[in-house]
Amino acid sequence: MARSRRFKRRRFLGAAAAGLAVPCVIPSGVLAGAGSPGAGERLVVAMIGVGGMGTVHLKNMIELRKEGKVAVAAVCDVDERRLAAAVKLAGEGVEPLRDYRYILQRKDVDAVVIATPDHWHGVQTVHACESGKHVYVEKPASCTVEEGRAMVAAARKNKRAVQVGAQGRNGLAAWQTCRAIRNGMIGKVSKVTCWHYANPVDENPVPDAAPPPELDWDLWLGPLRWRPYNPRYLPGVFRWLLESGGGQIRDRGAHQFSTILWCMNADAQVSFTVEAKGTPPTKGLWDCPVDMEVVYQFKDPDWTLVWAQPGDKLGKTEFGQVFWGSTGRLVLEWEGAMKPAAPEAVAFKVPPGGFDPPRIAPYEDFNLNHKADWFRAIRSGGRPAVDIEIAHRTANLCNLGNLSYMLGRKLVWDGVKEQVVGDEAANRLLGRPQRHPYHL
Image (cartoon, rainbow, N blue to C red; front, side, top):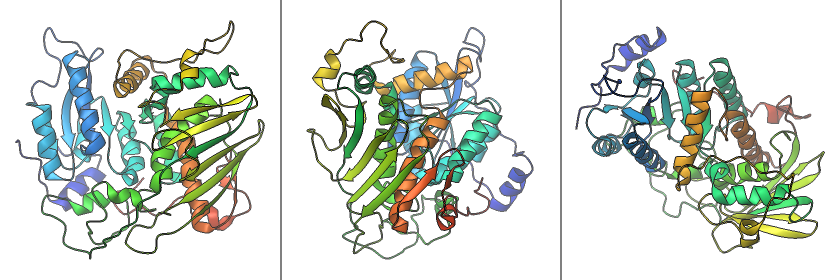
């Protein structure tokens, strides 16, 4: 494996503050050569975070590379083992990096795919947009309202296409369900309920320890407050801490709510009330509620959204949602991408003059479809299916649900002002301090 860049942190951060001026070497084979597609035809991408979902995205890019649509310039991860595996997968000519800021220096990179833990999404997306890169970032978009708004502002100011990885909107099942709901197959929908299995409990807590030698713990923490390393923080299990992961509602809720808002034609319904209750764990490091119920009330038009762990499981799979209409109900398993739609939604025919939702579908794989939609937005100057504004509003549902649980009270959300009405204590928690130099 090619050695990832080593650096003295003080020297690098000084250069970063002066405009990311550290010189870099562009590997051969990245830029288009004679007879190859030019910059307008082939996108040069870099991968930031190559763990579980990051590996899926890298495999997608390798497939698209075979079609001549992309070139993969670099892979980045704070874990040397994951980095080595990604380099082996990507092949020669791909630069391995430990720090994403080196990628932002590269003038040849058109776009980045961010699949780091949630607490990095906001900072890395903003920095990438400011560096002129288009962004595909994993869901949830953000951990706080403040982060999400900064992401939207950076995308708009720098005219970058930012697609968030809630693939349901480019999934077949969600498209079929949206088509049925929007055309009144079950009448007027007044309620949508979600079921989902509970958050896990840390049954075997372990003491803090020294981080493993292959991990840059400081870079993994990034904008989070400093804390000692503990194996219960990563990999993957960061999800079960309210500070960094936010539990099932911020993870799967970001998928399910995005699809529900699309089916309900409710992307513009930004104001609502939210009331949450849950059972906190009694042991271990993880602090997300084990079971949880969150009720959202929307007005004009009026409808109710319920997130429930475990809730009433009306489908066959681990999670899903039910649309309750005036003439019937419709179940959608999972988030609308990985499982089939209900047979009645599949068979539904759009009536003359009805709504036929758009869908980019050049591939059977929904992940590839979602990236094809992102590429379309990059080339056209338009916005992707899960544009950062849509994803920010979706993340607000998740984050405010957790905030209501933590505060133990109902919140009235003014989505235009992005403030909790009459609750200054709650408003102070819409953002949080970020550790220097990993901050917005």
